Image (cartoon, rainbow, N blue to C red; front, side, top):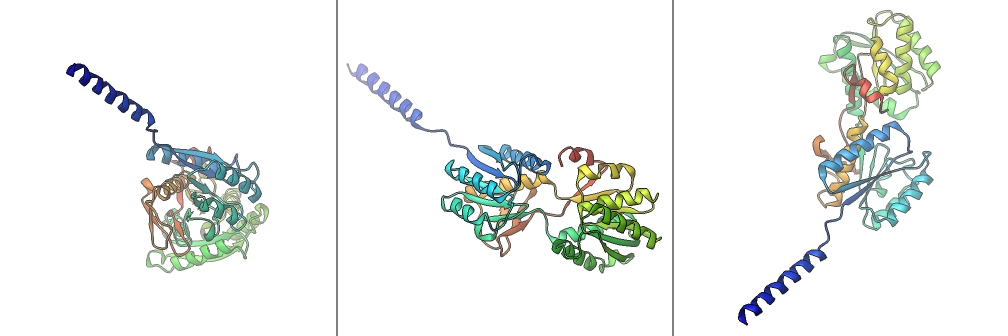
Amino acid sequence: MKLKTTLLALAAVGILAGLAACGQKKPEKTRIAMVVKSLGNGFFDAAHTGADEAAKQLGNVEVIYTGPTTPSAEGQIEIINSLISQKVDAIVISANDPNALVPIAKKAMQRGIKVISFDSGIAPEGRQMQLNPSNAQLIGEKQIQMASDEIGGAGEIAILSASAQATNQNIWIGVMKNVLQKPEYAKLKLVATVYGDDQSDKSYREAIGLLRSHPQLKAIIAPTTVGIVAASKAVADEHLVGKVYVTGLGLPSEMAGHVKSGAVKEFAIWNPIDLGYAATYAADQFVKGKAEAKPGATVSVGRLGNVTLDAEGEAALGPPFTYNADNVDKFAKLF
């Protein structure tokens, strides 16, 4: 009888243990929504690739990739409303309007959703963090360094910018001029700064003007995706490939041919894969309580190290990524 009672007791324990196991839910996945400016944009498709890489590395993270069909704040507001209803854990967004998205982003944060903006930021009150691809100092330094490398550290250089009123371009040019004061760039001479107003035809004419006015010119720096293409074409049309080099900020899809022609050895722009990866990784850190939205706080961005938040809650990922003959074709397929 005693044996029977013991067996019954053990069976009961087994049943209870089984019921307890059934009652235990598997830990739910962290759901991070990436809201881009618009769908069908190669830059953001590449950012999505980076987001998926971060999710795979982190484990137990699901990326929801979404965005309006045309780049509008209204379209993004509608999507964020839907994501609030879905109770996602975090929203990573490249904003179509820094201010128009603040009320809906605030609503998301009030519901416990972490909001990280990247690439194009939301105003500080509408997010925990803004991840910039780079910053003015790094962008300016990078462009002088590339020009110097292309021409062996000595010779005349010129800048072909967008409009004379372009705030970001003017800040970068200011940095470039300061960087040129460094001893290692003493043999570089900036002979002209011209403006193509981000119009292809005008940028091309300005580049031709530089080449003809400065026969000793060795390099043109164009911190604009329109200008760098126009300058590369001008160098080729003037039969100066190998004598004058072009560098600056460009898109791989537009620059691959100019790299092949020899007009450009290398150029730079942010790497959208790294940007999407870092923003997603940072969002997970906020969800898990491993990051704080306060000035001076460091946030882990996985394989890319750590970034530090400034007084506005912004952080810079690093210098612009370099594209050359070794990698331009791979990225040209993406953006």
